[in-house]
Image 1 (cartoon, rainbow, N blue to C red):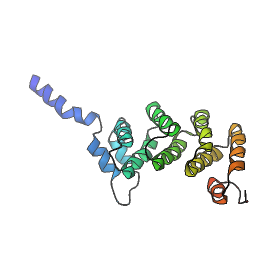
Image 2 (cartoon, rainbow, N blue to C red; image 1 turned 90 degrees about the horizontal axis):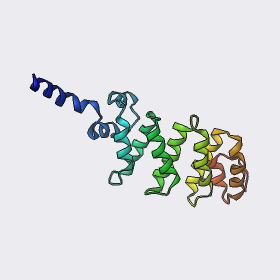
Image 3 (cartoon, rainbow, N blue to C red; image 1 turned 60 degrees about the vertical axis):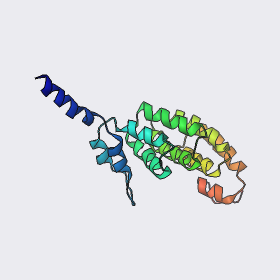
Image 4 (cartoon, rainbow, N blue to C red; image 1 turned 90 degrees about the vertical axis):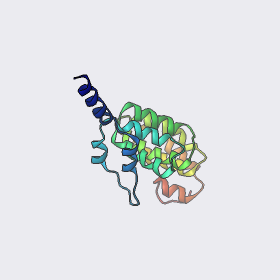
Length: 174
């Protein structure tokens, strides 16, 4: 009887949590698309492996970016804290930070509008024009009255018309 219970435990335990290999298989592919059903089949805790992959500097940035995209399926507190930290602080790859802004906006702009705004407004003054654009596009899409003054100030500081157009401002020369 003990061996039967032990065997059942050993067989069932790996199925309780998504393993890295199963998650990585869903992040691979030449023409990758987010497979929501695939991630759902891994269970509710699959986000933990996605967080680990997204934070793993040894992984390819492409895989890390896909992990960020997959995290949109898990809008929980741990994922929020990961994005809030990733976006607010300069980290490793600037492209991943910009991608994190996009994903954070997609995932949390409605449920945590004030918190997202508080993190993004300072990015309007960042040295990375593409990061400024990502932050501005999110703030414009949110349409909060409180961020309009920050967006006006950002618009006034733009020196290049390409940046203004990319950020979603009317096609006028600064």
